[in-house]
Image 1 (cartoon, rainbow, N blue to C red):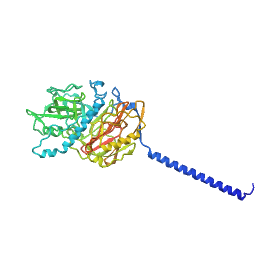
Image 2: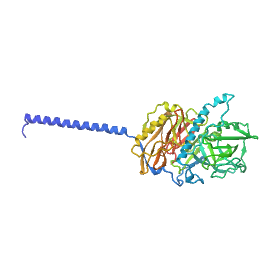
Image 3: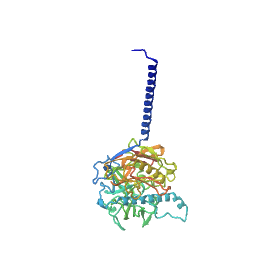
Image 4: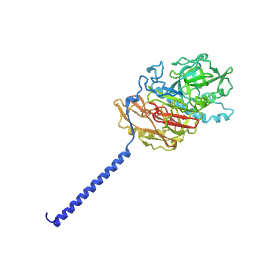
Length: 484
């Protein structure tokens, strides 16, 4: 090999420069690619991949049932396949009717909250009297349990409701009128433990706060009356009897309303069991036995089953607890919502949006209600992430709907709530959409009409969560995968 000349050395030098430049260029390209990859990861959102058929209710009751403790009751949807009703599917309310009744409940809740807030002002004025209608609420999307009443017991299907205090059932004789129910109407004369409550007793006087109406008297017997926001009502004797949850869980001298004049849209149930805070609610009446603790899980589909448990039995170790907020009166369970996440990212919402009116959790409200500004922020983010799907027709209070009729699998953004204590609770995929039909499947949230209205964490968003009410300790818990 010859000795390199000056010319060849110069060529080698130039080649080295070119190679070095190429290496630097490639490294720079890798760096840019790395930056791009980081950007993609950071930009990624969280989604649920959902088989659309899993969101639809089945025509038969699911065979998959939760394991029940002795103090547990099976929970089913009152318009679902597991409710033993003579009502046919065609007779069940339409989505529009359910949403209209839900809106009626929400208006009633806000009316009741306003009433409770001014109750002291009413009582401090000698000229003022408590209004006959307090804005009690019922709604349409309620869940039911089966209990035994009387001695010997008679099984009754009752709506369970965290927004109501008084437990009542239809009773024979129907002096005024009785609506159709699936179970035989309770006949108090057949129970050896039944007794009417006398007027002018502390329990009778407690009806004012439990029903919003002053009690009446027929002779010396206490009379209750409760009217709901949709004009449904129950009137009858205030009484006590034996309540049976299971063969080993029996509550003696349980106070309830024995309604002889009842009208309304109660879905062929026998009445209602009140789980709110008042002294006449079942939570307070059983405080010595269950410590003012109860929990429930609502199934992912109306054809499934969940549970309602009294006491601390069966509580998950994964429960996240948050304190109850400042109570909106004696009935509702107040909570503090701090923020929302969509697709894994926190939505930009001013902290004052939720604190302006406050928030509650409610088992009887179907669709979660948000302050207008919070809803707009959530909806706009959700729409952006769902832009690849065809839009469906809005219905009633639901303005963000999609047509999934040509899809077997859909990809929907995750949604989470941030509660006080920075506790983040993820909503199950079954709690994000409200299915009217395959071509009309909607975001299951709605805005309040006014920023001063309560935000309400509704039952669609509670699906599959184990929700724990520790009333004595002043806290509410959420656990994942409480039921199917």
